[in-house]
Image 1 (cartoon, rainbow, N blue to C red):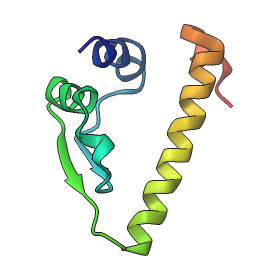
Image 2: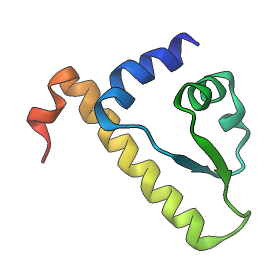
Image 3: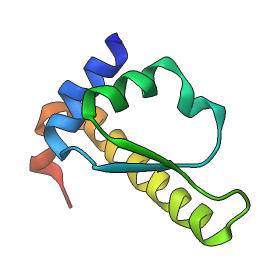
Length: 85
């Protein structure tokens, strides 16, 4: 629960709350962190179709985008908006 609260306070409060999150069927998305986060956000969870190339490509691109955002956020902390490019 602690990790979900940190994510909420530092990421979601800055970037906004998604209405739906599409995940692949990886078991890591059922970990306690994600379950708590989805409950806190009142966000629906949808799973992509297995072996669907278009969905997999979109998911991979979103993962790359989120990694970039998190990397910048961690580098600049709460000053992230001042460094958006």
